[in-house]
Length: 152
Figure 1 (spheres, one colour):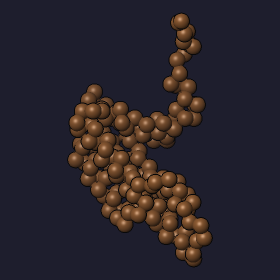
Figure 2 (cartoon, helix red, strand yellow):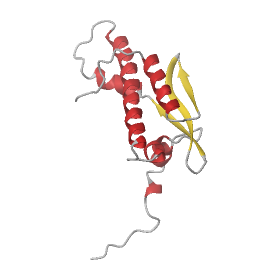
Figure 3 (cartoon, helix red, strand yellow):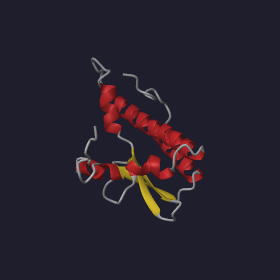
Figure 4 (cartoon, helix red, strand yellow):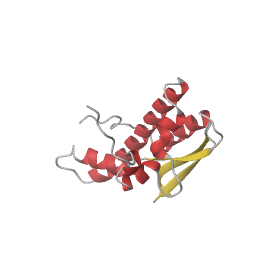
């Protein structure tokens, strides 16, 4: 398994600041940070769509998932390894999110994608994302109401 940014030495705080800059340059209306135990869990921002409607987008960094992936690479950990891996996981998770945001904003700027097209899974209603909503309904919203007939 090849993990991008798994050796990043850029602090999460710096990377989060860079993401905020990117979002500000893209014309978003504001960014809010969600914290847990002094660490940023997610960034939520608002943006105005071409139809003048405002949407909230929540971008979480899944530090725990990155930690698990990094931990699998360690055969026999030394004392302090888990703490160092957790710190690395935080840096890596946010660096991956920065890369993703940069690519998505580039696609939008080059008119290869629309804002809502790339950020739709992360549209946030204050409780959960659009993707979480779909997932909790076993993707029923994506299925047609009636079974389509196959014509031979």
